[in-house]
Length: 440
Image 1: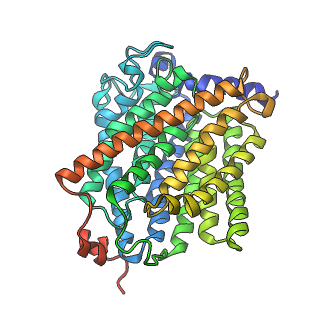
Image 2: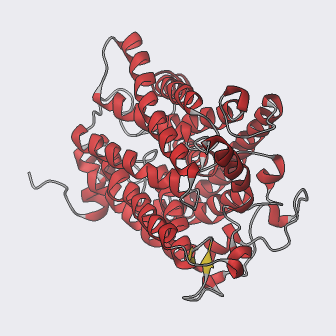
Image 3: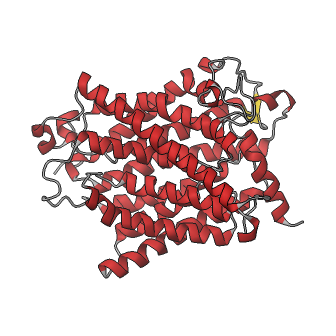
């Protein structure tokens, strides 16, 4: 049996069911294979944040701020995990009042019928798995997305301010965006026909734009850009990048909420995106700088993974290669050129990777999803699909930037965002937590 018909059928069905599966619960039966895979995928996504992201970020900051990154990642996992159960899950998946093609308040955010997981029992099933497994999988996405933002304001933001920002941002930005993207018929981006398999808009552009807003509101680090601030341990960064790469398979394949023919397409495209991202970054870096760097190779892999995330179920291998190559090249240029020209201090280049990579991937999804270019979405008219993707990108950018800016300004007015100059000089590990990453 040919794989393409299977892939096309599943790819077309996924936007209809991914985060609106509870209507199917009464008809579902327990699928032990799907359950085992989704439990594994959940652990893989959690590992992306702890320790993957924490190591990736921690190695790039100065030694005196290493623990502050780990502390923020652990804290956001705890706070967002609780908020997701209290109301986040409901805001994301509740489809009450939604009708395909119509626009209501529930096109933008879910209802409150599942507060504190109301109605969930040990017998509740979602797409063949216990609902508790599905909740935990979605929670892992909710945890890592705000944690990504921490790299932008590293080395200068108060711990309490960072945690409050991430909690408010999860509530006002992430949960509504996840609903708008994956909420099924009647959700804003479903009505627009936007294709986003695993989070190009809801995760990567979303966190990248919030990072940009944080950089602009907070201002530059003390001494930046005159003072040289090299990464203190690139080995940690490379280990973190490797963990992120492995965990990304749980992130992307798990988003299919199934084990089927499409899983192989998603797995292959995810791997190709990473490989091509490395090559794309490396080629441009060699051409412009004269030699490749270890940090560049790790960043290229992540750029390719970010770019392929929205497209991984919709494009063929050729499309995955192009998306990965262009994402790697575009992210390198954003890190080396765009940031300097615009003059903002994004400590760990969150916007340049997640924002730019997410935009490139989201737009190119609309091109390479077409069967004429090896894609799996039948009936695609590239011009119309590209317009839908562009609308999704622009809406995500504007909505996220405005709300993130307002949250940051409010917190700055109420408690202040930045640590004192003395604490920034001392380092956040000692100044905020009275701990050191290293004893000497």
